[in-house]
Length: 431
Image (spheres, rainbow, N blue to C red):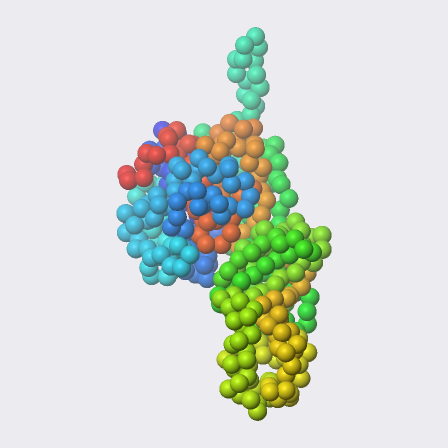
């Protein structure tokens, strides 16, 4: 029986503890908060998009950073495995648009409760309000050919209370820097650095954008569904998506926009980018022009400002009028072909200048983290310190929205737990 310590009681940490406990190891899960899964609780606006119901290749295609590293972890514990894991432990699931999987209850607390029950069943010891001050590493020597080779090996952790907890293995699953109020304050990066690991550049990801235009404030709260988006730098298109977005008092947000933030983090630091929104992607320019002509034909004597209700949301109309250059008081039967073409162009390419990203307080995840080249992708064990493992958001791994980031947490956590426990990944799922 091994003694395994897991630091961090989020998604990755709980799954790591479960994986390690499945073969009767003594597992101690240390969580500095008063309860487990604080960030998991608010995920997906409290609904918890637990995974995406797709095959492994599709999972990998939605990973932004270092997707190849996740090949073993995803094949060892896929989204199908995660669904099976939860359903066989009593949690009913449902699949929504985009193959996003949620608990049928729409309550993230049910996901947390399911994991807590499994930890209890496996007799994993959970210590709440137990913060770790540092990890303890010792130098060892092993015979290597003609002489001895010096190696570093984990010895345990030292808690903030001053208690030393010895361990055969330590799994760090402390999260990133997003939503610091949930306990994600970057402790794991400090522990990793102390072990000699490299931390790549950290930045907020899946985060809203600031916009440069003042009129954006007028659109605060406006949600647009089924629109096409492009984010460009000059003539180069960096990101394209179809879906839902939201205007805020500072800029833009919403699922389609958030995923774009993870793609363009480096470029937006150098210069502002251009967001182009196709408000009517199902219509060609010609079809849209015919639609506008039809609407104008039905309201011949109306003013321009009173003839747009069937084409745009009411909140958007004043901005459309202002940006079109057409007087709101003009009769629609007086609008020229050139003015109508300008309205078509504005509708098919409604542009917003993106000036920067919001901060970690509004970011769903952290981009960057522990350099994956220094970690064994099959086991999640450090290549620098024996018995030290990593899982979840603190690794330099991230994906777009849709349940993919949580699947990274489940898969890397389970891989770390099973490996630290001395077992292969495939066993234990149905135990």
